[in-house]
Length: 140
Image (cartoon, rainbow, N blue to C red; front, side):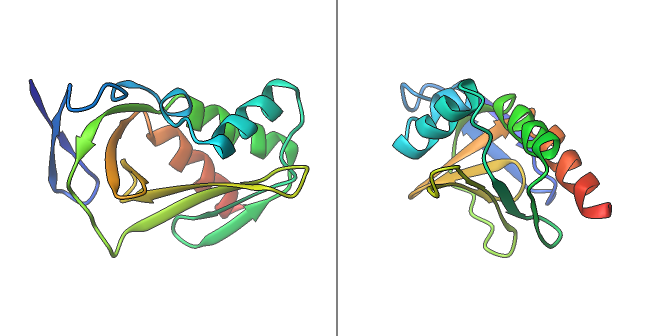
């Protein structure tokens, strides 16, 4: 089965489901890197990261606990729906959590609807809430 998804850049992204066993799931479940597991464990234990940095319209950061919780909540709602080969070099975004122990968990995005993990690209669904929260923080 193939699905066509429109990205904010206007390009159609073809997604093939079933290409990889891990595709289709909430981003934080899908992303099983040790740093992501540490972030999830810290949040579950109410050890809120000390800072979140990002690049969207501009570079930003927050140390506000409510902002950090809102960013994490929106990211936890993102769903990986499949792989893609689309790579838009002039639209690169990131979200980075600085944890209480000083370690950093970093998420790269190609365009706003594609998660980059190493050489792989994954199309996201339900990603709009994250970008709305970050824009709202930027506008303050």
